[in-house]
Image (cartoon, rainbow over all chains, first blue to last red; front, side, top):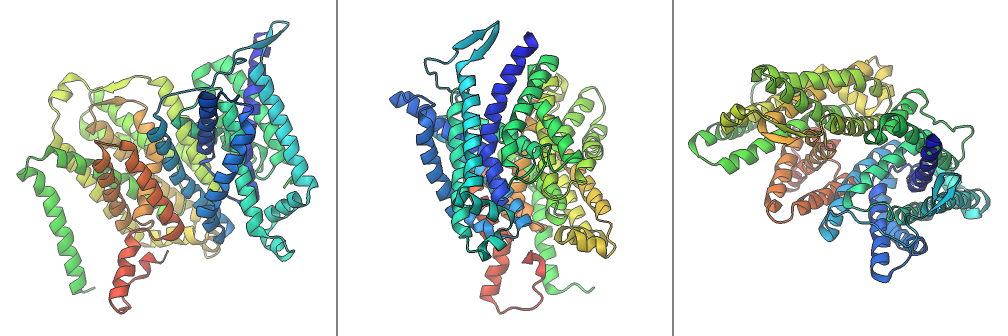
Length: 291
Length: 320
């Protein structure tokens, strides 16, 4: 029974990892930008949800649409100001330079948040936080169940958007070969702008959920970390596999916590990550290319 | 080669600066300045060490904190259990070399960006593991504290920064360095013309992590007490990288210029807003990566070219 409880918490964490990794995977898969500052964007979004809750008592889950709009705008601005200058590089240099630039962004965002809001740890506490459903001794937290539902809905919606709509198909074409896409009459610059802004907007979703856990200026790096692990586990560009990879990571992590103890929580995922990088760099879930 | 006037001028300027740095602390009793300069030399050391692998060989090592930290840990532990310092200090470098051999080498097989991601994972794993094994503060024994002298540490840092710069200079201007730069610019082409790129990457990696480990050793020698995880902090991954790029990646003077700017900014804001200095440096870094790939050092060349007609002997150093 104990193990089952651990696995449930693992699944809940895994769904959150999936939400975190989506934006990272989108930017990486579509444009070849490895945005290591994605966790810090999530941190900023989480502060957004926190202040909305604190000042106007807006429920964190209800703040998601609002934060998505805010983060979408921020992402568009960020793209115009910084990332559009990267698209002139060839694809490998683009990757390298995006890592470098986003390292700089981490410095900027983390220190900005510290200056603005101090290094205190905070969190939102809606009335249902800590409430659980008890099924035969297994405890299912409300927030956890909502997180899983949210992750599934978002992943499905994204999949439908990318595979069924015209614009989604344009995005996939651009991801496969932007030069060919351009020759076919796709406005690559606009596609990039939208994709990047949307990738940042997903930080608004993850941020709202994370605001119910813990928010401080230094959380960004840890979440980027989980995002990176998932991108590699799923395989670069394989957006559909992000959530399954997240659930897998969550469960593996939960089992390692059960066996080795809480302090080593992060290590299990990273060891998995390094092994996959070395033995199966195309990812665990790579059947056919999804993007 | 007959030294031209320009070379003599450069040499005399360098000699003057060296003499100033060597004799200044003997003449003046400026503890603050000596401390700041020691820190500056530490940054020059690790930035230059990063430059060998990241700048000249093109392998982005984003996990330098692991090597820096393991160096600090090895030096501190061997020093505290009673080994003389001249044993403990190299132990830091050797520990980093060992780490590079055991864990780093497999990751060199990873191409391009996967090496960056892999080393980063290594740094994070190291921080978590060390934080769990050594949760406390590394305290030096009482008699060490009583015998603490600043000047030997200053000279150690000075000679370390000098050595790593000299080694980088010698390596870069040798056949080895040419091979490294070829590997960076086009790995497949380099292999096609018979360059053993893997071997060169290993050599660069070994040099880089050895000096980073020595830098860690200096850290353990310089600070009396610190939390064991501090030298493993991820900041030690970012700062050398940022410094090198702001100064000028793949140039000898770049890491030095970058370190001077970084330490100056840090000291300016140290008493008011510690965070602001890193924020400013981060913005400068982003601007440099986007618009000035040669770093601030390349501004000097551009400026000179604006003033004078091109002389032809302007080397292609800042072209990259």
